[in-house]
Every structure is written in structure tokens, then in C-alpha cells.
Image (cartoon, helix red, strand yellow):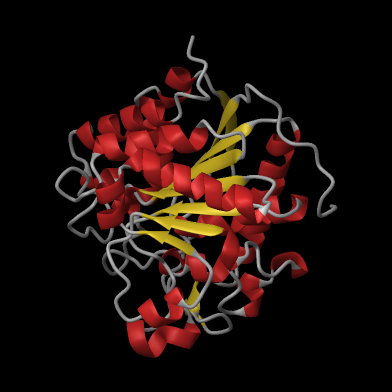
Length: 315
């Protein structure tokens, strides 16, 4: 596949919902237990996500079996099977993008970002807006500061910007999948242990406190201006449910205080998805097994519907 020369996406893009229920990038929540985030797509679909968005149902990319042990060659769990799954997910996304669709990918964990960014890297130069409670920038070069590498869900931003095991970072020889300068990170709580390294990169950062000070629409506007100034052909939105405050969204693997409200997240997504450069989005980490009565899935579904309103065409 070529690396450029594609026409911009058409106006009035139709949302296509694609399930990617991979938890290959997570540690087990308990010995012998598979992380429950694989249930995310079903939980949101039961609350009518596809119908409420007026979206096409793009089906499912089935992941390989989850294994909790560390792959010695890559230093992470499931590092031997994750590259193949990322390519398969990228292939499916490529076909959706070729039709002019706006893919909404329902994870799973944050490691599905490799497939999304690979699909875009095949097409040219694309940016990333990462809306995440943590920066997910752990890699072998800073493990002595932030702890051992072992799960790509905590390392996905590092991996897609080219840091980590070559088998993961250099998919199809396209390393990096996104340039540091084309990354805007929003909603993280802090940079403990990695501030010096991160602040030396050209990534653009708006932590949760900055978003609250400026307002979601202002942060989105600055993010869009930054990416447009970089000359990207479009951008992908990565949304980790742990960007929300645990007071309203406790059903994540690493809840941290000081997160966004439902209203702040919806406003941020509305401003981002209204932009012509918005190319697709993924949602990760929400664990329905921690949502006994389903009210969190209902709130999350409503927020995604509100946030994607600029693209939705409900019946």
C-alpha cells in the first residue's frame, strides 16, 4: 500500500462501529483471570450505541487467545501475537477508510492503538489525539524510573511513537507509526518519573488540570490548530475510559482521582469530531465486569453518542 496521495475524506462521513475486543495488552486482574475489557463492545451495543449513532455495523476482528505470561522476545504479555492482530485490525480499518467511513473501534485495551495507527501510517502522515488518564509512555528506556515494561496497554503511546521492542514498534517497516510532533495528549493526571523525557519531545500536552482551566472546547481548538499546523492529513482519537474521574467511572483497571466529568468529555469529543481532519476513534479499558447493574455502560454510551453528534445520523 502506498504512503500518500490519498484524497481527503468526504464530508458527511458515516460512522462504522468495529469491535476489537483484544485484552492482549493488559496484565491479569487476578491469577488465572482474563481482563474483562473484552466485554466492552457488547455492553455498549446493548445500550443501542450503533442505532443511536445511525452507524453501520462493521463487525468484529477476533483477537488471539490471551496469555498472562511475559513474552521473552518483546518483554511484554502477548508480544508474539500482538503484531499479527495489529496488522489484521489495520487491514479491516483500511477497507473502512477506503470507503470514506469514520471508524469507531470498540476495544479491548489500549494496545489496539497499534492497529489504528498502522492503518493510518499506510496512508500517509496522520496525527493522534490521545485522551487518556495516563500518558502510557512506559518503555525499556525509562523502566528504571517508572517500573518494568510488561503490558502494552501502559506503553501504547511509547510504542506507536517508536519506543520499545522492534517487533512491536516497526510494524511493516513503518516505524514510527506516528511522529512525536503529531501527538496531542489530553487528560493525563501527571508525568511522575518521565516529565524530563516527555517535555523534551515535541508532543503537545494538556493534562486534566489544564483542560479544566481552559475548558474542553478551548483545548480541542488548540489541539486542532496544532495538528493542522503540522500538516497532517487527518488524526485518530484514542479514548481510554480512565480519563474520567473514578467517582463517575470506577470500572477501569487503574482509576486515578482528578479526572474529567461526563460533560467535559462529551464537549471535548464534539469539538474534535466536528473537525474535517478527524478520521476515526477508538474506545478502550471500560470493564463491564465492574459494572454490576449496567449504569456505567449506559452513561458511557450516552456520552459517546453526545460526543460523536457531529457525525451521527440517527434514524
